[in-house]
Image (tube, rainbow, N blue to C red; front, side, top):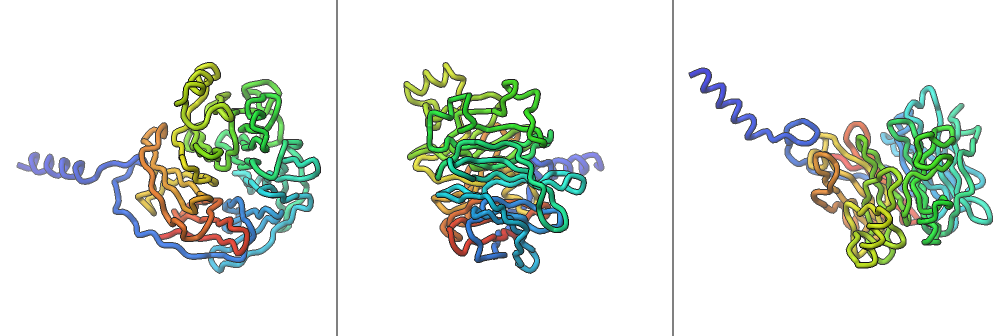
Length: 360
């Protein structure tokens, strides 16, 4: 009788506690709430959790600032003097060294000069400010549109940099150009020995304007602006061609099919027509908001919303989509999950921009 009772309990457990991709039992959906933590900002572009527990963020005009989450105070950390903010250009991506206590480095990507260009620079944090700039890569073509510029330091300690086509579409297929690419560098700016081509920073190509970049396990995802159609989420593979400007979205037209077959083009996981203008991209896998576990979170400009993209267990597919905060805060540029499970959003309306906390 005891064995029968025990078997019943085990059966009841497994029928009521369905496992999720993170390994825990499914939890009830959380009630999602929001609050404005900071306002009066000017075009924030990237956010990162700083070593001091504050949110460090960039503004396109050249300021790197810090936000005290607890009291909402914003303080200027540093202003980069040679930033040139033309159109969509300016100070854009930022990444902090993952071992910041021993390597207090801040990596940024920004536009400068005439002719207009993009460069990647490493600063050292010391005495509560940034200094000792080291140019890791410069001379990247830039324009008032299509500059990419999202940065990511991977788990194998490589620096990834997205570049746009700088409004010259054909450059994305030109392997002699740094435009329209995902670039991969060592953290000192040298070229990794295992890059596809010796001496080249190019990791993948055929990108139009990738503004979101995130690593999930051994997978890399980018969000990418299309032209009048076919915004994309792409799963990045080494040395793959992502089609632009010859392929828009999926390989589903006759000319595209032949080009895809000949050039080994990778199709997107998701494509949107009409376009939504996807920007910052992050990964969420925390029980704090259980309905967002194992999901990409995408900040959207044109449609002014946050999009949840639920991944398959192995991360190879997007299984579902859900929109949040539609037309609530304006254009969303960046999304930052933090260790306690909360999420922070940065708006990009141009004036009185905000950083918003998403909590339960």
